[in-house]
Length: 206
Image (tube, rainbow, N blue to C red; front, side):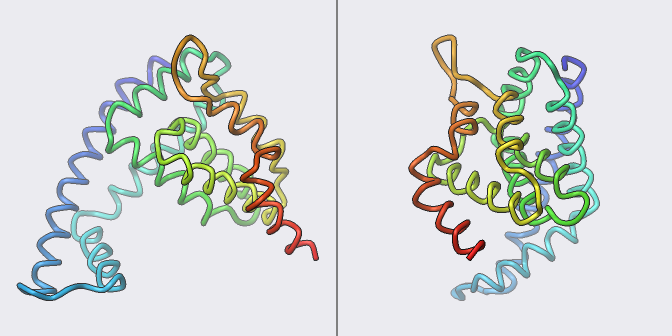
């Protein structure tokens, strides 16, 4: 996947530029809305964020997220572990791209519907693999639970989905790194699954 490095670097640059413009526009709109002393509600902040995205170009954000979909497809198709490790390193080198990959994984949970559900979940869990547990650990477990439940709702076999992604993920060998592969492969036997996911599966089948 060495040919992806310049693509990722170009994407990083565009994403960083878009994020800067979004942050500036969001801050400007927020100041105008609240004045000097006002405190904005969560709903107002969502409205301001939507307006800021529209102002700086939602089409650019969609294009950048489309790039991640292509990257996740290539990541899943790559047969060798070393190139996949490079992708994880390239994405993890910049907070902006790491956060965008995490957001892509979360967004896939809301988009996993209909005939495209399996492909959407495969891409989303690939993004999770690329992030490689570099978020709060408890949040990572929560998101894995959401993926399992989303797969069940969509008629996708969660065991097969998790197993195929575990095979692509970081095994944490060689004296360092995370154990994302282990988390995926053993998720169904984890205490988190027992306490938080299985009860929801039982209620859904009751």
